[in-house]
Image (cartoon, rainbow, N blue to C red):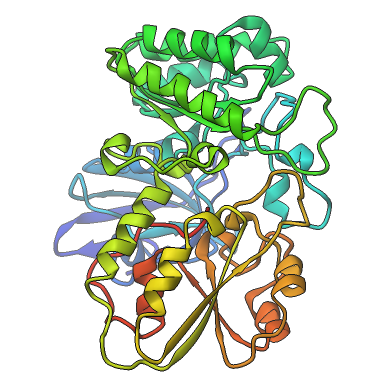
Length: 466
């Protein structure tokens, strides 16, 4: 294939012209190609890693959403800037749903939309220096809400953003509400224009879009009467509000706002009772209590039916139930023949409340030894107790050397570069603990990694992260 023509027996010829893009007064996209599937349309066009997509049918794609929508067409014009600075315009035909075979550096080709609020419970504002760089990013981007379920406040959206969401039907979104009362919203979001987010949400719902919502419940601020009013207001918006998740506020030792404090066990129980009262009332909008509320209150985790389709799983609602159910299923499959192995399962203080049955189950395997290492989060302090935020330094200090053992961590505790939140890598952790370190998503994946079970056909989905 040459720069002038692109031949493919399965599709029409690809005519290529070379020119220069006209200057535009908009932020140019950064659709940097990092991978090209062998044999794909992009490969046949001659696109390579390092090239950039500037235009799709004359328009600059803002993100992977635009890319996926705009390239689902039979006729395409792609304006590409090659790594050496050349520009080519590719015009070609393809099947509507045929993928071009490109991988991009990031899903967002224009800058991330960051948060314009100053929430007193904001985790970013409570984080010490020296953590992974992503910890300090105040993400409030509606695109990541649509793509990955990130909760956003909608307070930073312009009319153009709202029009785009409506036009492209970017639904459902995931919205942090916290309160319906204007005064409470302004206090909880630290933003005198906090009402903008509520109005945007109602505009989208009134137009037929859907959203999942969350309330970060702060005792003495938006619990009790305020919580009841907020849930009632959300339910009044109708079936467009798909769910309401209520999670307790998480505070580190670096938090200094005098209005913020952790929930007591009694307050967690009272919040569960309030949610149960809403669940017993007729409504199309289900309300769910976070796992942490049950753990804090010392109450049993609800049964599977409580969580319906687990629509707030990424918000930590239902994770413990799924894990407990998978432990029960695992009991039927573990080997009865001897298997040599020694495991140290690292978890946070929450995990100490529900992981012992898994350890007991693994210890039933002849020849196998498992132990639970509960690590207190000294890095963050406060009421941070989930294993997903454990620091390497805390693990090293509290677990100590475990020669000859396998040390297991929840996969969510590490990023794609295999770093814990304080930038300690798995290799560094392994060296300090004098042990092999593995990560696992679920009891099933853990059992497979330990050689107790053969690889499963389906991917495991249950995080060992609470």
